Length: 436
Image (cartoon, rainbow, N blue to C red; front, side):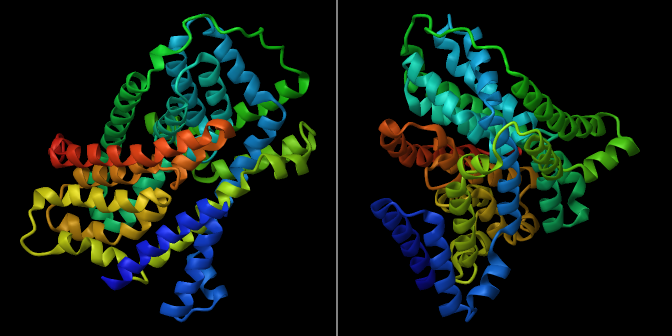
């Protein structure tokens, strides 16, 4: 118990020092992790980094944001967004919904959770300010629509979820996992969409300017921008379409393509092509369009969170779950609470890795696979709107400095309300519907 308390004290100190002195949370997390490694697990810095630093996440963030960074620097992504907004300039009250669909499409077409906020956040905030509605709606739009798009069956994260759960529970649960994941995705999408509608009315999305937006017709794409858009569409096509075909009509060709033409490889090839074509200066893209601050924050905090196992945090928090006589019906709700509290301060993927050892125990205890998956998905996602978590932080990427404090304060409160909703939803037993 003492080490668990120490863990949360360190989390509080990281947040306080980071805000007070404007220091990246990730850097503080790395230092805190190294101190824990030295004092509690007797590890030096190099062994600790080798064992715990999320190098794969770092690479994924870097290569994907680099690719889309070329498109952003060349003005191609902004041009696409401007054309969408121009088409709805006469109906400003619909713009929040238009932005929601636009973000979803960008995410579902290959950008996913790692790149979509960096591509669309600035544009969505710009639309909110121009149309006169609350910028919190803009932040929520980027966060929620990105999450829905990232979970589509043709996206890499879909198969990653299946592989992760199968690795944890064993191949004997494969059939249940293959049923649970798509049903869970439908549940998540429904919750996000309903929350978006509630946010639209609670924060007055309909109270914006009721006049047509004053904006000139976007200029035609330049030759460079047309080439950039073509490369982006090719990468999206090669990453998404084979996945979709393989789901509908399995065949050896698309099986090979989905196995070897990963989004990371395609983004790397696309980056080289765009760099050779000089659509933008490589050093400028590397310096201005790769979000190093966010990458350091995400990787640093994930590195720190992995030391929660050293301090026995999960064992302490999960003790009631495995205690004999604890009501089975309440286990998923308590799992949501534990998952959500940790996710508020960190990336949900890091928390999932921390809680993964509990999955076989809970399934063996009688928790339905589908219910556990939905509990994990909601608990690991709903609080991620926090500005201290990856999702919320990335949604703020395009927020102007003059309104950032207001939006951040709101995002510090709303995730707790979302977490309560998730707990009540899971406790109600509704996710058991259709469980097999």
